[in-house]
Amino acid sequence: MPELSIADLVEATGGKLLQGDPAVRVATYGIDTRTLGRGSVFFALAGERTDGHRFLTDAASREVAAAVVERAPEEGMRTPEALIQVEDAVAALGNAGRWVRKTLRGKKWIAVTGSNGKTTTKELLASGLTTQHRVHRTPGNFNNHLGVPLSLLACPDDAEIVVLELGMNAQGEIGELSQMVDPDIGVLTNVRAAHLEAFDSLDDIAAAKGEMFAVMRDDATAVVNIDDAHVRVQATRHVGPRVTFGQANGADLHMEELHSQFYPGTQMVFRHDDKSYRVQLQLGGVHSAFNALTAAAGVVAVGAELMPALECMEQVKAGPGRGAVHRLRDGMMLVDDSYNSSPSAMASVLETLRVSDPHGRRVLVMGDMLELGRMQGALHREAGKRAASAGVQLLFSVGALSRAAAETARRAGVPEVHHHADSVKAAESIAEFLKEGDLIVVKGSRGMRMERVVHALVAQFGEA
Image (cartoon, rainbow, N blue to C red):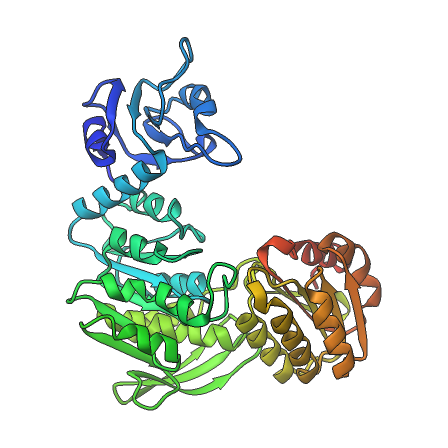
């Protein structure tokens, strides 16, 4: 981890040292005292739900070395030995991340953003590069104004490549995070209908994602999805070198074949520099193939060897909620894609369900797709039509918005449809409707807690 003195931290945050020895050195940083220990720094954020200043005594009991605070503690309160006062602790955390980025030399920095597939692409790319380099990556999906600086502050000194994920909920966030990271390589996976509550149109979402290309240095490399018209337009905001990928002719990494399946995983063939590469993923779905192709383009942009990177990517398994496959008793197969959802992600999952050939029925458990703004009704109805076209024979819709999908699916020919108000009720009743050999896909936005259905089915039927 970047080891700083208290004096360095004062400079990095633009704060004032209230107490403590400026020569003391620290090496770990966080916003939750439960994750911190001796020699660490606690940023006491004042949020909507809780105020970090309430936990200064807990930080002291864990031998945290320093706390970054917005106000002096109450008289007599036990605190860490060093206190640094700033006007805004969130801004101070960001400033510390920027300071560390500027001081860590000799590394290659990669930023990954996009509407769908950011986390999986980041994991595939980082995993592939570990065959040839020491790699630090964003833990989980720490991709916002808090997670990105924390990821920077957690970067090991000996890392050669740093792969960071950038997310957004509003205009300007990607630009700010991109300036913080100052990437040598910027990857934009795609532009899709997501976060429409905060944006008026898909063009506005594209412009927000494209802020990364706009602020990148001229000598940085853009990794561009040339199948996506919005990405192509945004890529013109960067005048430097680029690596392109997609199914379109002329892509530097050209997808030639794609065989989508949930188990054992999707297979693809792509061509680069007059050589074909066949990749057998352990990740299911069309979207996984394109995530892997995006990651491969990132490997090319780095200048690393493709073959060993691809072999490593083939070993990457889907995590909980991100396409993990459970083989249940009675020949049933459960696909846990419950972490999040959007119209394009739902369409990709349904396409894989369509081409699947289960022993039993195709079953979809669909939770609401959130943050779609005024388009939410139309997009849920479209999902219902897609479910029917995919050959779904049993549909469970969960949530107020998904009722529209259920009604549309029923009219479009899905033979059995059930609706539940929330995932708790769905989890309690779904098992009784399943039959031997069914292929069950569970998907919904994070706020719908669709993992409850997954847990209930695994508990009911057990792993085969």
